[in-house]
Amino acid sequence: MEGPRILHIDIETAPILAWVWGLFKQNVAIGQIHKDWHILCWAAKWHKEAGVYSDALWRHTVSGKWTKGAEEKIVRSVWRMLDEADIVVGHNADRFDVSKINAKFYEYGMLPPSPYRTVDTLKVARNRFGFPSNKLDYIIQLKAKGAKLKTDFELWIDVMTGKPKACKRMMDYNMEDVRILEDVYTDMLPWITNHPNMGVYNDGEATQCSACGSTHIHKRGFSYTNLGVYQRIVCIGCGHWDKLPTNLLSPEKRKQLARAVPK
Image 1 (cartoon, rainbow, N blue to C red):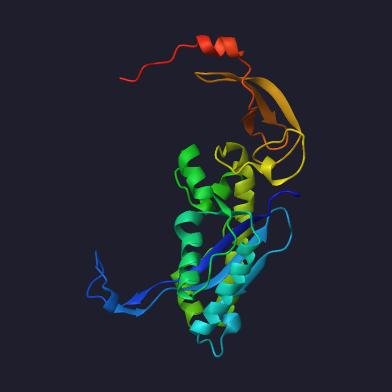
Image 2: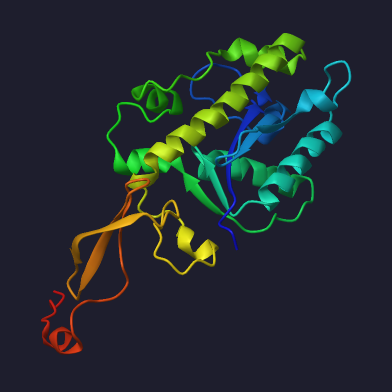
């Protein structure tokens, strides 16, 4: 094994078009749906690789009119990407990108791709930081590394009507989001406490950083729990903290440790 394949992914979807009687707090019944949501395009990038992969509904349509067959083609192309991934990274991936893609797999009678684990940078932002906004655009601008391309709802309307310039703009927007996502993920890496352990994905015997897989680590202090003491290490590459699994307390000492009695 040479390490996990990490895929950064982002999708853009069309909204649901429905018949409603007002603008505020509407309950839309299934029978009121005029046109259901669908995937417009997707973009994905393998971690630390240069190219960005993508597919879009308009690449498989004639005269700007999308069909179920066209959407199925882009759903199958994203399936092939996910099938190669060990770890999938997305901003709101768990509640949006991955779940929406899975819904389309189900709709088109497709089986699940090979299992992968997810890292949701939106969850990391909410759990580890107190940003005024957890939007990807806000987070990337904090470090002056760029910004998302500016869009508005008119772009979605123009894309859904098949205007070529709008479609190109949408694809540029989607692909740029994936590049930004990779930068945010890399910056957040030392802060992610539940990241899949990179050391299990390769055959190396040396101690590795659980977040980035680097063997350039430094022993620094100890981690204390109620039942043990462990060597603490910090990654020189990404700055992530870990602890080694061996309990440094002797078996005799561990036998003497008092344990709190639950109330």
